[in-house]
Image 1 (cartoon, rainbow, N blue to C red):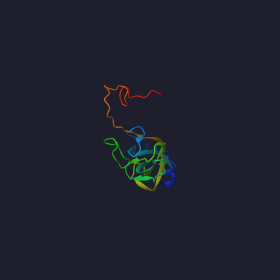
Image 2: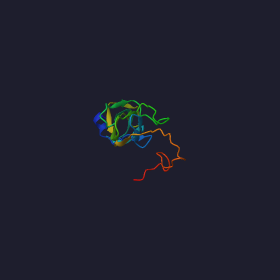
Image 3: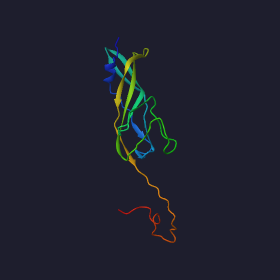
Image 4: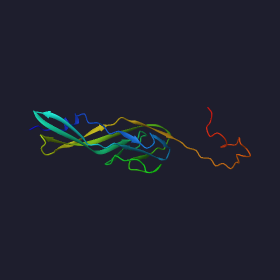
Length: 166
């Protein structure tokens, strides 16, 4: 009977999780920028020693690298969208500086296999599959209080066209 080893499992073409973001990767300095991952079990079928073998790869852990030198975050959940802007989630991150940061993700998959539709047999260990990085573009925002009447002074700050000509 065929046996699928950890090295066999790691050599499979397991698809990586995709990194998603509520705001397309844009965030505000010192605000919660939320990233989350796709979660999908995968079944790969092959023939070994003349036997039909099904191998399942099940995601069990997501390890985030937010690209700013902070400690990586390992999480047993892929995360999900924020309910409202700047809400903390299990996979959100706060950047302390503006800039562009490469956000990386490694998904750990556990495996199991079945020969000829028989019982599932666990494969000891995990396969770590890196995702294609995305960019976090972190901006600074400014707010100003205005106590000017735009009817009296239409040229005053914050009066007229809100877009600055370059």
